[in-house]
Amino acid sequence: MTRLLDLSIKEINDKLKSKEIKPLDLILESFDRIEENKDLNCFITLNKEEAIKQAKELEDKEVDNILFGIPIAIKDNIITKDLKTTAASKMLDNFIPIYDATVIEKIKNKNMIIIGKLNMDEFAMGSSNQTSYYGCVHNPWNHELVSGGSSGGSAACISSRISPLALGSDTGGSIRQPSSFTGIVGMKPTYGRVSRYGLIAFGSSLDQMGPMT
Image (cartoon, rainbow, N blue to C red; front, side):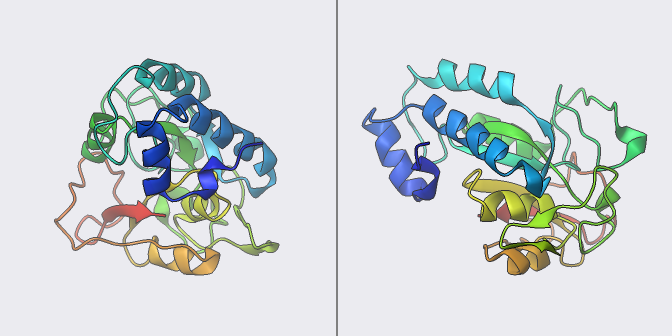
């Protein structure tokens, strides 16, 4: 297996610009790593067919921003058009949204490639990722330990280098705490700086989406 996803985003971007690699190389490596780390249980839904299709479509396009062609995974309480969004609850097990969250529109405008939806505490209510209908997410550093929550799937995905970036959501620590548990960086932006449109709410006056890397 190639180790492109061990590089920084800037290094990956340079290789894409020089045509040394293609977006498809990154996507295939991501799915190889998902299979390699399936015991972590960090994904609820994979977007493999669409991700491969999008990667192939980007091959002949100009690399016009640093996020171009980068694989990204999305916490499953963020609405994604035509891609199942469950908030880790049995109640939404068959929910296919008909629109994208604002953050997803921005990701797509940068030609990032969504590889799947990440496990979490059900409706973001928890801090250990043990309340998911789809099972607990394990910590990549020690499978006997939790990954933290509620963005535990996002943290485990990044810590195991399945993708360089993921989105989480934070109401009372749900990005920051799992990031600290798994040795990555996560940020809760100042409330109001990032649109909450398309986030399945927990506490609307505190909820905020943010990056994990």
